[in-house]
Amino acid sequence: MAGTLYLVATPIGNLGDVTARALETLRTVGFLACEDTRHSRILLDHFGIAGKDLVSLPAFAEGQRAGRILDRIEAGDDCALITDAGSPGISDPGEKLVAEALERGLKVEPVPGPTALVAALSASGLPTGRFHFLGFLPRKGPERRAMLDEVAPLSATCVLYESPRRLAETLADLQEAWGDRRACVARELTKLHEEFVRGPLSTLVARYAGEETRGEVVVLVEGRTGEQRWSEDELRRALEAGLARGEKLKPLSTELARRAGWPGQDVYRLGLGLKQR
Image (cartoon, rainbow, N blue to C red; front, side, top):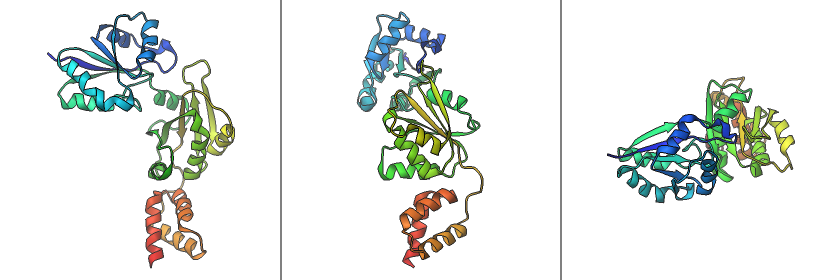
């Protein structure tokens, strides 16, 4: 009989947040698949879980190593997947492993627990009824801008993870793309130096400019509020007026996309059509 793949959430900082079910699962499975075996051993040693077979499953090699892990589960071993912190498969290794396990007809069972995005959202002070999780933004270039344009019209709170080294740059990009919305930076969640900094994006840009930020970071930004998305006729008239004033299409499209609640690529294409006339 085939085994089960357990997706075990582990603490994001405070080890007291581990669940009793998570510890029981880690103690009873045949082997563990770990994002980083060195990091996982610290957790296991803390809770006195010894003698476990640990298999490395880093994000960059998940596609190559998933098959061998699933072969063992098919042969009857139960496996617990754990990442360095939080819930596997959420901007962490696990997505490919789960997909392949389901393709093989294997049982996949979540063992829920801590996750940074929910912890940050709950204490952010921003609307929580609906939210859109972006994971990590593309680092730069057209892909980054395209993602920001795609979600600009959403009224749901946007949540993303970011490296502390890129925090200041990302906050500035968010303000440029979305305007001066309410936002929150949640840092070092559940740890000794946990910090929530709340305010308009402009305030956060100034707060973190030139600062050497440390620790894990979650950024949350309020969704689009106020006036409704512009109609195509309204947008067309604004483009025509801007082009008639001699404005360049690309910066004009960026500004109008922010104001109108349209994706920037759509505004740019509409502007190109107007220019070709």
